[in-house]
Length: 268
Image (cartoon, rainbow, N blue to C red; front, side):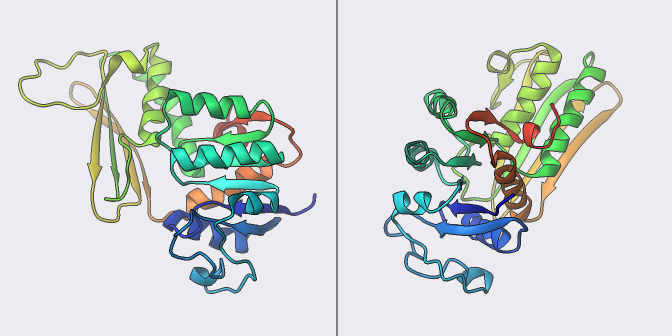
């Protein structure tokens, strides 16, 4: 199959730079464009500068032109920006990989609607290892369905703007589904003061923000006399970038549809 030309959104940011580095070394992937919001610090500079490679592609603030120059847009920016880029991708008939988190119900509905016209991979975490953990959690939740309290603990860097993380929420959703619970009804996002005894049907979330933590996630099944912890720790953003490129390859040749990394990895 022909090489896939990708356009990287948020190219000046930490994840954008990692995506560019990964794309430059990936088989079957070509960096078609890199773009960012007007006023971003690297507008006009070579997209490969931070990776120590000259690409001949300047980071632009013209999102329309950047998306038009590619087959697939990869976006890890913020919900409001991602939805603007999604509208352009839909207008131009381009595939899109969305790693942005923090969407509200309307944002998620907009993504689902766009996927009726273009192919979209939308996942809270693109790392292959994290998606393997999602599958492990399905099995663990079925086995530990009685007598175990469930808590989800996550840690990220000080710059992350949403909490709990999309990955933590997906972990909670996976466990809740296997236990026959509605996460919206049973989730506890904070405890303070006199809370009373823990209700066994709840799923708790704890959030840590600080320093440069890339992303740590643990699901704790706490029983009487034992604890089972299923943990994933990210040492860099490269796993997210590599998973995103895998998602872009998955979308090649598809006309429309909404997919996630479980589809990309054949874990359904």
